[in-house]
Image 1 (cartoon, rainbow, N blue to C red):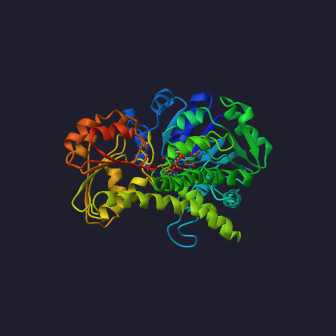
Image 2 (image 1 turned 90 degrees about the horizontal axis):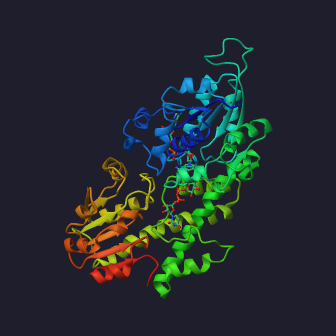
Image 3 (image 1 turned 120 degrees about the vertical axis):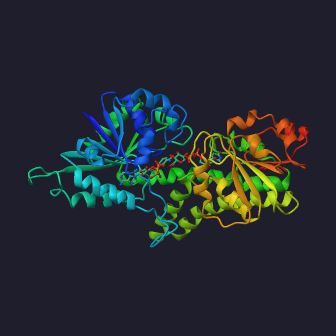
Length: 463
Ligand code: NAD
Ligand code: UGA
């Protein structure tokens, strides 16, 4: 019986995933540990609005389980010592420098995690890769743990041999729907060589997941499947975005095309919404990782094929920025543009790789003044995301959509927040400079009603 779980990394995956396990497994005690003291403080905040991750449904679970079988702490040593199972859920961003820079995953956080585990491990422990990792990372973790089997601060004599097995159990949650995805997953993937450990991890999920949905594979298939799943999803977005440009040129309408092709069960109707390109911390980094792996194994055509998905994504963002400039008489210098939405998608406060960043950078470099409004993103996040931009223009953080749109020449809808649907667009029109433009990169607001108010409207994928 698994009694104690430790999760290393209290981020967008570690926090929600452990919250859902805690809710469904009241008999298991879970410690979520992190080196980031401020993040842990935020997880322990009495005001649930201050949790570091915004996800619909998360606050309720934290309220129910925190302090009972779910604890957030910086005491990594204690967490590891007590654990029967350790989930590694730390960040694995793209390497910025050195060998493989721009493509390979930076595994320094994984390595430091493995070293912490090696130092504090007690007895037999199942080490689970929850982070998304390059294929064969389990071997690296194993090497580090192997080399410390007898030494360590908590092992007094050699008979106290520390033993471990490594399991891959990648996470498929999407931000904004994380709690629902965790509660009702399409599948749970468990990869490993040791049947006993696999069955232990499977048992945790069987508390709420239909066993038929639990897929067991070898370690390498599991690690690779996670990268491939993200690559396929991102590929659909780049495919539909490439077609959005063709629609704009030919008179076809992207939503009609999406509907027509999505009705074919073999294609399916999900993930066919054209937009400003995919954002988020994972799609780009995971594809680049796949590209790196393919090149590493000499599969250059495979690498080039997948890299194109990332190239089209950036192209779509550049295309939208250019269209804004073109429609605003070729210049945005000294013009005010209101940006609605900074998170990379709705229902999350995550801004990592948000298309808003790239589009804003280009507009600021053209000399525009930008006003940002996002229902969940804080000013400090925008400061961080835009701090490296050298530009002519400047930007302001606004607390309401109306404050952002006051005197603006255009509104750019970049994130599909539900509340944008409820804006009194006719009132907003009245406070903007004319001609007033709406650039709806998500086809989110009914364009006919906007046109009837008097707006000039551009929507993605429409003639
Ligand atoms: P994150 O940056 O939000 O969280 C990672 C946390 O790990 C940080 O708080 C960091 O301080 C902590 N950390 C790093 N090294 C540590 C160490 N040695 N000891 C203790 N804590 C440490 O990242 P995330 O979005 O939660 O992603 C984590 C992993 O899960 C990544 O590999 C990502 O690709 C994968 N993933 C993410 C998502 C998602 O929606 N964000 C979904 C599926 C998979
Ligand atoms: C994605 C995957 O969906 C998850 O399965 C995976 O676990 C996760 O990455 C990960 O590994 O991090 P996430 O990035 O959180 O989840 O959100 P998605 O819903 O996949 O959206 C990604 C981006 O694609 C967003 O910018 C979104 O706006 C965009 N998108 C999505 C579109 O432009 N069109 C669509 O039809 C769907």
